[in-house]
Length: 86
Image (cartoon, rainbow, N blue to C red; front, side, top):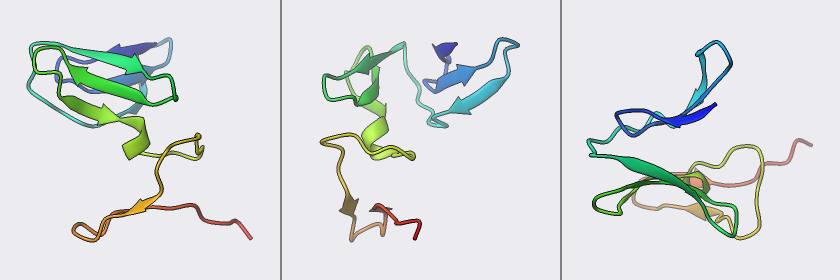
């Protein structure tokens, strides 16, 4: 099951209500929604302000989709890169 918790986190749970994965992002919100963009970016947005709470292109997993960015943030040192297994 894919749900949005009361604190704005996106939760993926198994059939026994155990959380398998979450965005671990919290936000005070009157409500939020998840949107899947045409290019494959999953975005959690605040219903009231429209502010993006979490976005999958900012938190890449093991799959790179077309148009997902590879970047290096000089200010924070955050890297989004691909690494060869060999």
